[in-house]
Length: 474
Ligand code: FAD
Ligand code: MLT
Ligand code: ZN
Image (cartoon, rainbow, N blue to C red):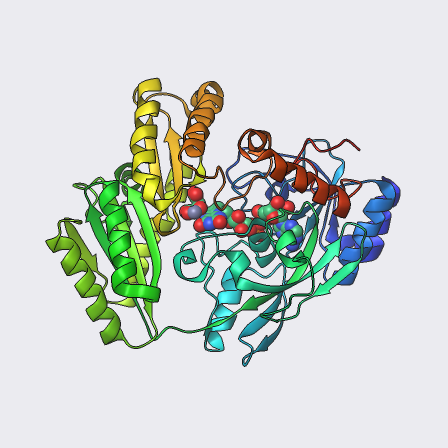
């Protein structure tokens, strides 16, 4: 192994190969569910160096774990605990390569932090719409490898829909130069979409061509109280009808989720939550004007109040107020982390069946574990819930997870299956859900996935054990 370390040092410079010291931020996952041990953390500066690293690892049969911001929710980006894997950190590859204003595209390197890309786009007068609570640390490479969702999907789609081209270092150390910013290209298999969402198991994304949009003329945000989830779904239908394509965000937050924000971040002043089972955060991005957006939004709220779909609502009067409302939503994850680990689910259900799913699954859980609390929130506009189960008051969360995690996962995922949903809507599979996936994914689809993995990464060099782990041994 010393020969490999020496070779890696020759490729990237000794200061960019870490084998000792504090490697915790690379080796432990964001939720602190797992800790691994890397043979070395290697940080290349360009695509050529990535190719050379892959070739060196291939020769020595040392597997590679690509990592961006290490904000994975499914333990996807840390090494295993054997101390035999190279952790490839993309964070030094953080250049914006170019902007094409007529083509509405930007080419960025994989290690660019999402917020940096949003800011560069805005300075140039454009919008890059992907938005996640982790945007200050997650990277474009990670976003594409997980096909991240977030809070603007209802209008702009997932990361996949925002990407027109990729540059990828394959598992054999070749470069696929696929950065074309074409919106139409029917010349064969869709390689771009194969790498997007592949969680580092097929190759390393080194750069991407992303779509830009004109900045909206106005953005409006509202917060509404809904008595139950059926009403929240009705409000979504009404918002689609009233706002049309201007509807850019539709988030739902259950009372218990908001109580955690109120408990841990009282300074955020959560509105309307005490007397309402659910609150909804809506956003409209209007291409006409502030007046147009506001009159549409006021119509929507007026109708929803008259029809008793909602019981109360506030429309943000300033950008600062809108940001304050979004901060509440974005801090649910941190409030949960402060409270202690819970059993986390990131599921999608057809919007039309969500209310029945929640009623039925809530009942099953509370019958099984008296006092279990459900932290239910998420991207209702996309049919995506973060449906998390928390220990009853007084029960240690570690004991709760040890005793109940498997059974609760089975209960929730069986219910997801019954209602026609998916066990991973946006966070991916990583190692947390890899064993579960085979029980819920169509077997033919799984076989096709194995075939693709074998074809593109025949020696299982790339992030082994993530996404699919039972395909072959080395
Ligand atoms: P990492 O965590 O470093 O890696 C994620 C996966 O991608 C791993 O499998 C890794 O091996 C692979 N990978 C990383 N970079 C590359 C590359 N260049 N080439 C190949 N493979 C690579 N996710 C959502 O979808 N929606 C949300 O709303 C959302 N909100 C979040 C809020 C918080 C507070 C946190 C902590 C996380 C949230 N996430 C969300 C999850 C996470 O931020 C996303 O999955 C994000 O896309 C991961 O980016 P990253 O750079 O941190 O990737
Ligand atoms: C969110 O929507 O806030 C994220 O996906 C993170 C989470 O599920 O906690
Ligand atoms: Zn989410």
